[in-house]
Amino acid sequence: EGQAIAWEHLGELFQREGKTVEAEDAYRRHTELRKRKNECDLHRKAVGLDKDGKLLERSGKLDEAAQKYFESLEIRNKIDDKSGQIYSLSHIGDVFTRQRRWEEAESAYKESIKICHDVGNDRKQAATIYNLGKLYQAQGQFVEAEAEYKQSLEMRKNVIDPKGEALT
Image (cartoon, rainbow, N blue to C red; front, side):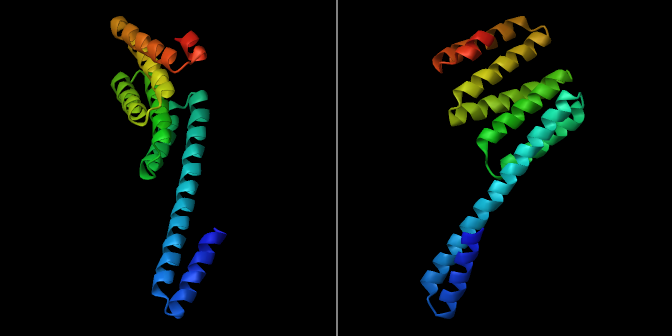
């Protein structure tokens, strides 16, 4: 915050002195610092919403939990926080699974898996594929569940995740 203000004041000073190039540079730096601060504030808010959602989920208030996760996802989309999108979508999938909202849960998990793949987060991708297997198993789709479990297991072996391998 202090750096941003200092750059703003330097920009004003340079502008008064007729130093246009220096003023533009100072204002650009001021704007970049403000933007980063705003993104950090939004990130903190998204993390808080996820924590609120988890508390609501644990107390059985699933609709309210899903709403918190969706609010978090909206923020994470706005600031292009791919890692955060993965977690918000996974939480949404978990809630929808508990509510037996199968198609919505599957959609959330698959979107999370796609982002994991795009950013190279194999560990979380394997965990989410495992959750997709649990979803299929809960629906009695045992062949699909087995395929997801096997894919998750193979991925976990490749990322050296003994805890996850034991879970799968």
